[in-house]
Image (tube, rainbow over all chains, first blue to last red; front, side):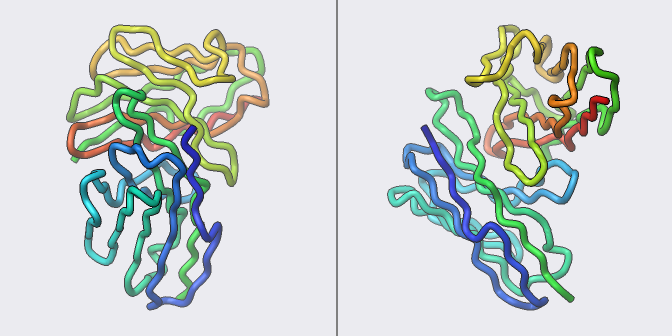
Length: 114
Length: 114
């Protein structure tokens, strides 16, 4: 059974800092991995999707890496802004022969202070 | 980009009544939709997998007679919470899969049972 752990659970930083959010998963047989952002009381916004054959993906100030064999992914946020404050969720996707399910970690709650 | 429209965004109902939540994929056909629930300060827990034209597959511990899922078309999936009780109060979110884009989530439905 896939288990996903995100560290840290919460993070509070001043504006401008570069951040690293960590995600580990127990079953390395994944199809891909997505990082999402969730604002309080809202749905999920997809940030980055990394295919299992890829090592990293970049979008603007965000960079996500994937080390499938060791069961780890990292989300790097450069020059953080108050608008980045949200909960960040990591979700590896199972292969379609296992149902293609997304399994979520508990998330990292990020607060960026002005 | 892929859009999933979820309605209603919030609903309050009396204990014992039923509530229907709709999810529509607006610009893509979702052969498979997933339904999640989320309690405060917790991550998303998969409830069931909804496949167009067939019966839903429920996760262990989820009562299929209580949470009725219908996926009658490639663009519409519904979740009906039957005989709702206060412990069913939660945030319910659906997601659809679009090839090469990963999963797209609805905006969620906040259910409060009084």
